[in-house]
Image (cartoon, rainbow, N blue to C red):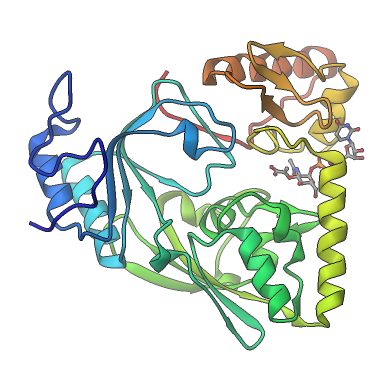
Length: 326
Ligand code: EPU
């Protein structure tokens, strides 16, 4: 058996935790850990609050950062054989983890193997774990325009593909040429972006498949032109969005009115449950003022939805992904 990455709550010799047997059973634990190399990060009972931008939520039974595609495939296959659920975690910026945490395995592609960014002509070859801010910075270094809007999205390439993330009138799939993904059986695939169905804030293909990377395309431009655009976007964002911990926009924009304006018009800015508060800067953000729980945030979300429905007849749909146990 390969040695595991050392972590305080990681047991290489068995699946037992204080208080009972390993979730999924010792057989699952043994199989899950058997093929992991020293380079792979593996932890049990990993707090997810520190891994989400909203900073709420419980722990994951298992947390893995695979070091190779083979190890990612192995984790997926083991989960499949034992019918243990898994969840992909990017930068945790569009995510609300409930206070009971996640039963099963959380997989994060933060290992350098999955987070590289390489410039090749007018293209950027990006791993799913690469941060969007770094992608934008690399594009600037390579004197490529068109990717500046990624600068302010607090996510990874993988998360942005899954959500077809957007800002400043740009969508992730505007700049994707092709993507690589793995299916739940551990099989890798490559697809031109033109063949992939995308929607506002969703790429359905990646609901059941795992993005591993993408080729993004830019257009040649002088470095100072790219820099100027990035600065303008950044300024607009700082002027209109809160700096406090949040999950980005909570609701999708309904067709008729931006959710932020609607919530503002309803007079709900500053509404709070515990330490969760509707941002004073932007109505579609809920911020964590320090010690909010997921329950606080969910209650506040319900209040906003109820008021939108009762007073304006609008059903607000969540953009943020809510996962985990109560
Ligand atoms: N507005 C208000 N009050 C508010 C907030 C907004 O009146 O409290 C008004 C603004 O003045 C503007 C309109 O509503 O006229 C739209 O606001 P904004 O320009 O901030 O854009 P948005 O539609 O609220 C979208 C994305 C953001 C992205 C921004 C900037 C969605 C749900 N949100 O926000 O994405 O950063 O554009 O491009 O599509 C995210 O998805 O998490 C996110 C933050």
